[in-house]
Length: 178
Image 1: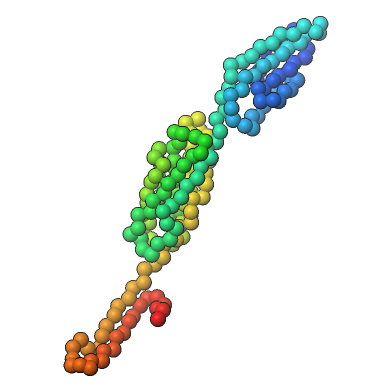
Image 2: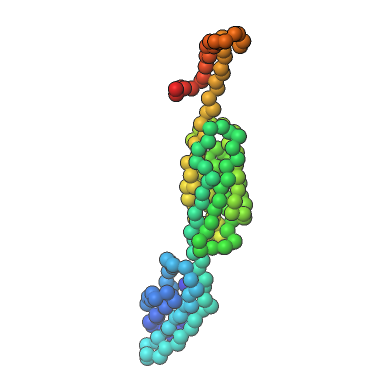
């Protein structure tokens, strides 16, 4: 704040949030959101006072966001993951999604989707930004996409007379449970 008072020896700043100072040109950090009217009382050597207010300043809160995914793990890359976000204390939020695989998207919609092109573990982050630039970023989920097993089955013979004995063979790229 810049003090333009003249003929004053003492000052009292009221920052509108319950805090005051007698510094001539204070630098002040607001730690909570809200509308604040700032008052300055200038006092001269004779004890005479002059009070001035500046227009109220408005401090928006950072958005308090939450987000979810429809599932956290899947066994192939064909699933279209659905992500939802919400801000409990803000409307009109722009969402920036980072899907952890190098892909990002920006939207003003609270729901988006993404399909992964490979198996692996992916940390999904979302940032919510208000029109004034207030931001919150969270880890949404850790998504894991497992490799699909590749298997085949064969039978030693496909026809015969009863009683018919057939021997089946299974080949798989993963461990099979009986």
